[in-house]
Length: 481
Image 1 (tube, rainbow, N blue to C red):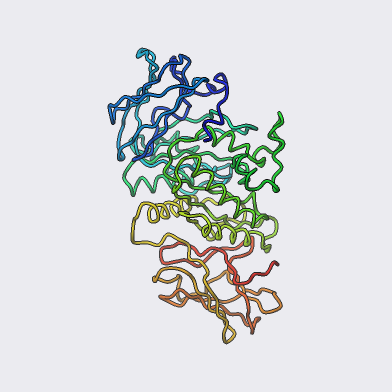
Image 2: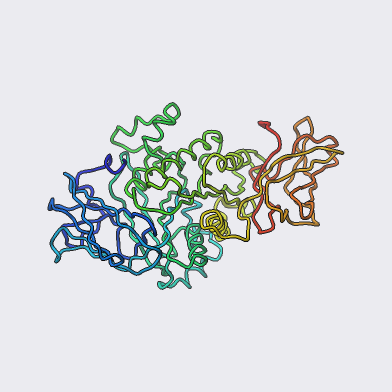
């Protein structure tokens, strides 16, 4: 198990921990205002320099739990958590009540781990010159009494897995909301509104990062041994750029959190892995398996964001289309997963679309329906199923519910059609009302054999299901153009 492997000397382990002038010390993310996952055996751990047993008592049980430290003073125990509620307190002592640790204002609810690159990292207050739409309103009206709690993990890369990271829990205040991931915050806000219970988000991101930076050495070495040279991890210096160096962000920003109990994961990453489509499907599957194993939650839901359109210096290029296709395929190979499409909210001038509330909401809809069991809407992006060519037209069929596609009665932009020459031309398209079909044609292609939709680097999606969930980029061919 990872926690047994990653023991460091106590002097290093105590960096950033809660000292409280006590002999018992805790990781910084065990703090006042924290949220623990409901209805589980929540892991709690820390260190002591006395060598004696540590006792843990919570106000929701009143039962005294004990933990025995190892040779390095590390101890860990499991505490059963009830249904959602709070606030509670946790008392931790190694025998001297005058020096015991006391964690206050602890809530029990749903905890989600939120990670990725800059589009996940983009804060509610936005980047310079790149605002998050609706951010000002969400910041100014944030109230501490709303049971949303935030734990932002500070950027840290490392050659070896660390025992501690920087990040403590904050109440739902304007000061806490402003620098927090907009995608993660809007997701948490929607969950809390609908579930009406406490929601906690642990946010661990780094702009520009590749997926392999968030994966452990054990995972990459065992499953991708011929694809990544990991020998540098045995050295003494980090490679540059750190945020695109395998394993280093896992070591600094994930390993210290293991095995904190979580309810699920959301993920917004992929731009940095464009061009490695087939490998990305395998990497993302291995990443999810790794996280579920380390956090001891084999069925934890995993919901991720499909990258938004962006020119990348070549608006008519196909790279993004192929990558979005790979992300779509990931849903089929990762159990208990879902994808939020963003083909309709890209911005030509920035890789960081401002409409993060739509992204957060779409992730929340996936969680509410697929994980929490809510009914009434279909939160999943309609996906291409089949195509039939007849009378100079292409009739494209989608996998979806019986409410059909929208909008009806107008030309749906973004479609292209090609003949045997593999040259694509802009096409007219219309939705068959109350149906799951789109009819596509072009006077320039009398004998079509292939259809593509929003498959280029830049485009704006215009096709949705009846609940406003967009159809993502797709193609009916298997050509490598």
